[in-house]
Structures are given as C-alpha cells and as structure tokens.
Amino acid sequence: MTGPGRPLIALIALLGAFNAAAEGVLRFEVPLENRGSSTFYVRSTLQGVGESLWLVDTGSGHSVIRQDTLDRLLDSGDAVFLKNLQGVMADGSIRIVPLYRVSSISLGDGCIIRDIQAAVLPGNQRQILGISALQKAAPFSFSFDPPTLTLGRCAASNLRTSADHGTPPVLTTTPHPSNTPSPAELTRSATAG
Image 1 (cartoon, rainbow, N blue to C red):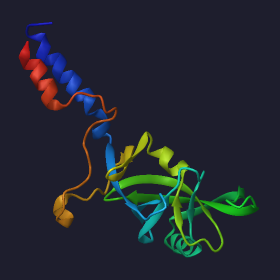
Image 2: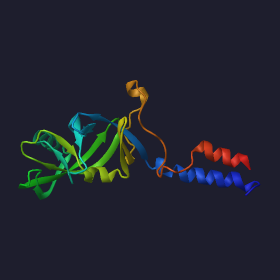
Image 3: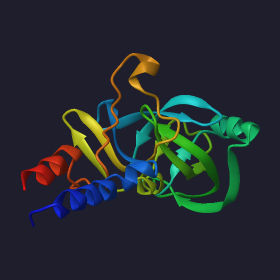
Image 4: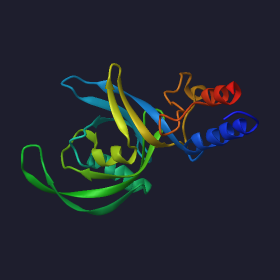
C-alpha cells in the first residue's frame, strides 16, 4: 500500500504494539545467582518482609516460605490463609501444610507478581519460587549464560529506574508478544512507501 493512508496504518499498529506496556505489563529479565549443583536463586522482595534469596524450582507446584517470613507477612497484613494442602515431600513422605495468599513479590529490580500462593513447611530454611508463581508471569524462560529468568508478564508499578540506584535497569520494554515491531521499524516502514 502506498499513499497518504500508510502513515496512519503505521500509527495504528504502533499504538496497538504498545498497548501491553501502557497497561503496565512488561517483559522483564531477572538475573539469577548460580549457587552450584545446578541450583539458581533469584533476589526478591516480599511486600511486608523485605529482601531475600529464593530458589527457583519449576518442580515445586507452589512457592514455599519459612515460618518467620509468614509471621512477618501476617503482622503486616500481606498474607491470608487459603487452605491446608496435602503435600508430597521430596523423600516421598506426605504432610499437611498450610497454603497462604501473599500480596506480592518483586523479583530482581521490580518484576511484580501479585497474589502468589505459598505453602509453609516446618523447619524449611529455603524459600522457593514455584511454578504457580512463575505461571502468573508466563511466558517465562531460563538462560544459562548469563543465568537469567525472563518473564513475559510483570506488573510495572513500583519499578525502580537507574536513577534510583545508579545502575542500568534490566527491564526490557519490548511489548508482549515479543515479535511486535519496534517503533523504529514501524517508522521506517511508514516512511519507506
């Protein structure tokens, strides 16, 4: 198509491409820490608790928090009891564990996932980011060089910028889906005809 209508079509495509970003949904890359034995941890902040490391475990159906973390979440009003679960442990034993809804978790420098479900295991020392939380930010993928967790849907509120902490953010503003043309590509195609 050539003529005066082409720039208008390009502008409409550009607006559609950034609709997801305008709604506060952004693709986000979160650095992972390799702690050996093929285990990867993500630096996270829980609303009402603060910063900690979480083991990323796609084999765990739910996220897992420690009892002391739950106590702080309950004190701040950021956890609500949902139900008891019958859980199968790694050793094959069966336990009844409480499941809570946690207000939000921020991965890396600001990928917010709201209303995650987390179980509390007695005596557990590691906090685990399980598949139910990762699915809320799907699609997601892992890269190993460098270790990175890429999430397709993160809430954008409360994102810190490079001015906040003096380092470049790891946020990529590519709208979801990732095959949407960039503004530069749309501008080139609008002016090429």
